[in-house]
Length: 72
Image (cartoon, rainbow, N blue to C red; front, side, top):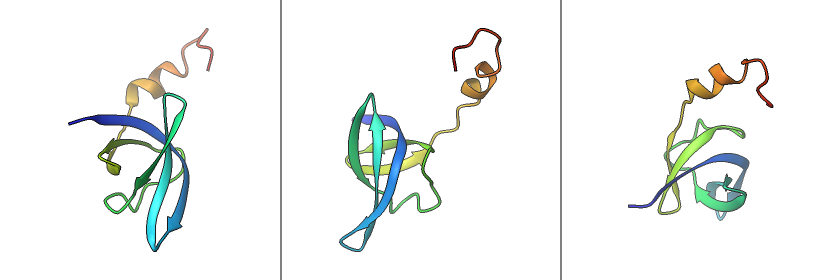
């Protein structure tokens, strides 16, 4: 099983199926969104075999974004 994690860059409909372009390490992958219809652009998701399977909540990312000296 190869699970990738990335951010949704775009959501669109192709052939009647809701899909998204997900950015993983700078590369864009086209994935089906049938399991995550509530996801939106900017959400972090896990992808398996071309299907977004879960949203990823990263509270540690939010915590570190307010640390002084953090470049974000």
